[in-house]
Image (cartoon, rainbow over all chains, first blue to last red; front, side, top):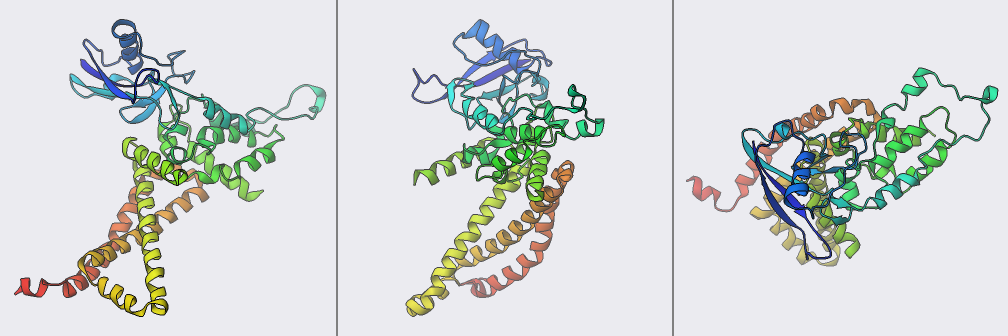
Length: 236
Length: 142
């Protein structure tokens, strides 16, 4: 296959505004991933291309970017799912809504600030019965299972129109993390998290658009979890 | 002013460049319908206030509403109110029963379909009225 890789590039130290650079890649296999193509460009064509990646197997969440207009992990995006036929174009851009540091690398700090705001850790100061383990039934564990799959790639948050409009909105990822602990039977800080999420920039900025659900590379039903948190605020 | 313009521009840019699916389309339509209806409300409040403050202006406004551009606008207003209401009910239902997320695509298309179904007779009735009073239509029909 022959693929034209269009990469949105921007180096704030040199460029006045972003531009698309095109790289023609030959002998591309249908099962190659977009990350493989980006590696090829960086290693053999233009070493100045900046991108984040780490595990390259869909676990670390480092290489989320906008591919053909949709947020996905470059390491999970197969060429055969993006191009039909023997030749075509793949467009790669940084995630929208976060400041671009260089090329495909965005400033994740605002995203992690929102993540930290919901206290993404187990809070429990009471000594468990027997002094050793905090027991949980399989049903209690199942209740927050979906939220545990999140890899903090930011694909959901940066696909959200509410986040594009207002970067102070905590965003889907932070709400998913809050859900993971709010519905954990061992946790004791649910009320504190719900207080954060019921504020102006909390869950009520969600417009039930479902971009986050379709963008999530871990197939977490993000919108459902957000709606469950909304319901929990209403009940308490 | 920048606090309003910047989010507006970034949202519109995102909505036009991000290839979201039915949900994004429904949201974009919902916003357009909402803003259109809001524009109507603002104009309506202003022209109604003219009955007291500026009666001649009110009569002029009423005459203006019978021009083609405003008649088409009225037709669009009907669609906007109907779609905004039905889509709002869909969103309410989704938030009330989160497990319905599995059917979100079907429910979105269902909302589009239901809007078209209800709007079709409304369109026929309103369009019939427009054609009756549209300037020049009678001459063209002869």
